[in-house]
Figure (cartoon, rainbow, N blue to C red):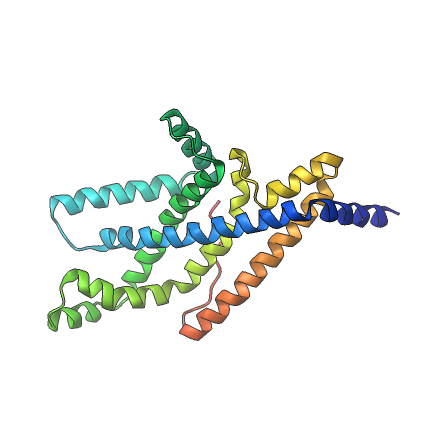
Length: 236
């Protein structure tokens, strides 16, 4: 009897809220994909600053900024960051919507983690690669762009892919600023009938399908490029 009622409510929630849940899936994937891509692009710049062997004043100041940024963002939960960013910008007169704030938060958070990932990837490249590139007349930036980064990114592919998977799950915390992603969409449906267990079971299955599918695709890509396959824990 319990099982019939349990699955009956799941069927009812899915039937009535299918469009809202599908929209939530789309927003979750949008937040995860855009946040990871933007974070990766900025992390490329930040990891270059962190690993650049330059004793100049400007370079030292930039390194201090990047190190402070990485320390603060990695040391605080994404949920707290989302609330700070959302309401701080509103206090400054920027009336942005929750989705834009969520994209900003995920991008900022991902940047900090991928900066360290890429730093490790850069440091894993043999020093002989630097010397060989410089010996043929390449400048420091050219060496990083055309010689070091392709190898560093390949070495970091598994961690970069896993950061995307982490983001799929961790975007659920953005419900605190009103982003209607998978978790929030299912929760609102469950709250209407006081059937939170059933609604969260739907959310759990959706997250499982999304993460397993993403893992399969990413591992296929990793095997294709010959990068090591490994797992990382959730950042939050």
